[in-house]
Length: 367
Image 1: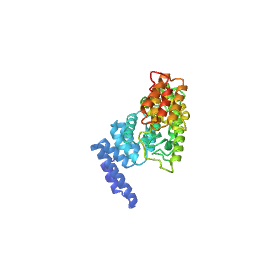
Image 2 (image 1 turned 45 degrees about the vertical axis):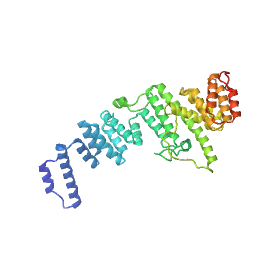
Image 3 (image 1 turned 60 degrees about the vertical axis):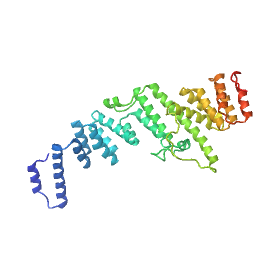
Image 4 (image 1 turned 90 degrees about the vertical axis):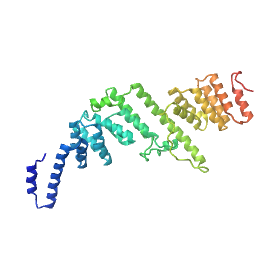
C-alpha cells in the first residue's frame, strides 16, 4: 500500500514529460482506490476494480485468499471474462495460480451452474473440458446434436446446429463418444489426465456398463440419422416441385436421447421411412430391442398410421416383417391386424376383408 508521505514525495517529483506525469498520476489514483476499496469496500467492489484494470491474477488471488463467496466470482470475474471473450485466459490463470484447482472447485461448480441457467452451452462445454468432466461434456455434445433441427434432412446435411452452422451435426455425437471413451480409459487407469482430487470428486461418475450403453445409443442414433436423412431427402426431392419442405425449427424432433415415447416415435419413423417396410424394419427392431420397448405397441402404432394413409399393401408388409422377427406371437400379429381394422375409416371392403383373413384366431375374426 502506498503511504501518504510517499504519495506526497512522488507528486513533488513529477516529471516535465506529460506522458510520464499521466503514468505517475494513474499509479497514484490506482493505489488510492485500492486503499479505500480494501478498507471500506465490498469483496465484489474490489474484485470488479481489479477486473476493470485487467488485473485478473490479482482478482483471483484476492478471491482465493479471502475465500470469497461464489457469487462474487461469478459476477465479478466470470461475467466480465465472458463479455470480453476471455474465458480461456481466465482458465489459464486459474490453473497457474492453483494447478490442482483445489481452491477453485467451488467457483468452477458455480460457473457451470450459471452457464447452464443462462443457456451458454458452448462456454459450459469449454469449462467442462477444462475440468475434464467427460461425462457431462458428452451430455452437452448430445444436446448440441439436434438443437434447432426441423428434420433429419437437416441433421444429416449438417445444417441443424444453431451454434456451428457449417459443422455436421453428427460430429457432436462423435465428440460425445470420444469423451465417454476417454472417461472409460481414465476409469481403467490408462488415462493421462491431470490429477485433481477435488475436481475429480465433482466430475460426474458413471458405471462402465452405463457408459457402454450410452456409446451404443450414440452409434445407433448415428445409424438412424443416416437412414432417415437418406429417406427424407428422397421424399423432399420428389415433392419439391409441388410443395417446398418446411424448415421451421422443431423442439421435439425425435431422437434416441429422449424418453420412451420419443424412442417409440423414432422406431415408427424408421419403420415407415424407407421405400418399403422391409428397408427400415431391421433398424427399428434394433431400437425396440436395445431399449426394451413394448414391441406390439410400436407395431400397432405404425400399422394405424399406414391404415390412415390408405397403405394397405404396406400393412401386409409390416405384418410379414413382424411375423418373421422371431419374437412376435400369433396373438401379437392378430392384435396388429385388429387395431388396423378398427382404425380403418371408410376403407374399401375388399381391403378390410383381406386384412381380416390374415387373422389367425377364429375368435378374433370379424366377418
